[in-house]
Image (cartoon, rainbow, N blue to C red; front, top):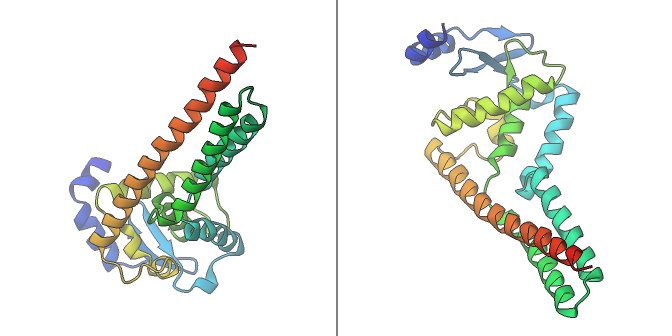
Length: 218
């Protein structure tokens, strides 16, 4: 069935769009490449509290242009560098750690210029889009993660399902952005994210090396 569906994806999509079935108080939104149908709310006020709360939490990260995992990594790095800046045996070592604290703090500030964090957009889409086998009143973590992975794959393949969630697009203030522009913005953001991650990994790697060297000299 999956092979058949993939071969005739556009035909199935056209069929589903022409037969806009409803699910509870939801309206049909789109069909993914595996043949799963998704539904959404026509009005933001209809979204259940559990999903609204998750949406508001994710909105904070979206506006900050940074993912929670990134903040955790950077915070850990800042804490480690700050500790080493106080405990280093040599003044030059302590000074080096202070400099790295500043670098990490500046990297965190630069995140606001990072564009659009697609990982957060995917999370928000998973809140808004209800899969046909899903309970709208509950956030099932396994289904949620499956949807996030699927959305990332669909976008990477150029199938911008976001445009089939108009309420989400309006919430993200992207409703005037074209498909091509959105794809470009996500791509640019991902490039910047990878560059910054390399900076982070290098700094954290330096911490590990210097801690090991310092420990072996004691």
